[in-house]
Image 1 (cartoon, rainbow, N blue to C red):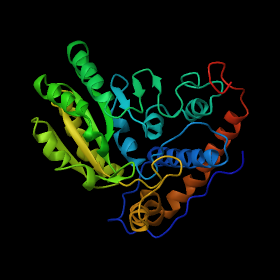
Image 2: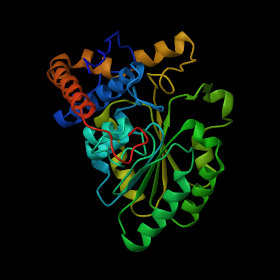
Image 3: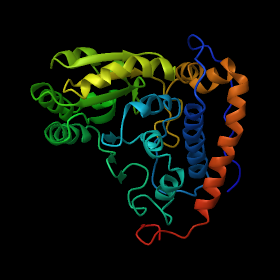
Image 4: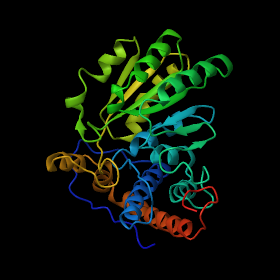
Length: 314
């Protein structure tokens, strides 16, 4: 495999300057960014099968949450979950091996990009499926492991699923330690949120008496500081919906981007990657090149492995 895609650094106009990150936060952000770019490149070459949904532009969400979630907590991810997995485990080799169907894969190469299980982490491509499961896990945790919580990631399009409301109803009635993270990127596959969702996420949470917190910033430190006391209350049995107003930089999956040019341009202008490079150029460039090289090395090493004996690609 050759070099990963080099992301363009266009003008960043989306909001106030970002605060300077801790080194480990920046390293993780860049690991996720270059991992996702590499996946798109591999698919473009025909070196991967199936599909994938990248979190380009949304990487800061799991990075901000990372220290707020402990090993006793359960994390339920979705179809756009590579960043969630990498923030949880930092295991780029195992994840790429899973997607490529190679030895050392997290789930033997049979789960692929969307369906991964490891310890207290589970992802699925079925919209809304994880919420009632997470509610059940949260009930179990409340009874057996007080202080632990279940965190579930969903998108704005998932609010069209009845399972969302069943889970919120149970969470409110039973005081469950359930944290619902909504990554609202304004479009459900190819349908703008305004065209498929009446009302608001906040209003729907309020209908069940569930607290709602809106995040419009992409500043990791600011987000983390604001969420820390709220997540502590979730651990005490107060369910919470955290809605991130974010931007999907890439296509829905590999190449099916139906958005008008102005929507893509708005996402690019709000991209944390270009903004951080502009606000903290020395810090950014000190870590960006090594992160790109790291992912390139991971891709080369994993591509050289034999297929997993469990993989359908074997």
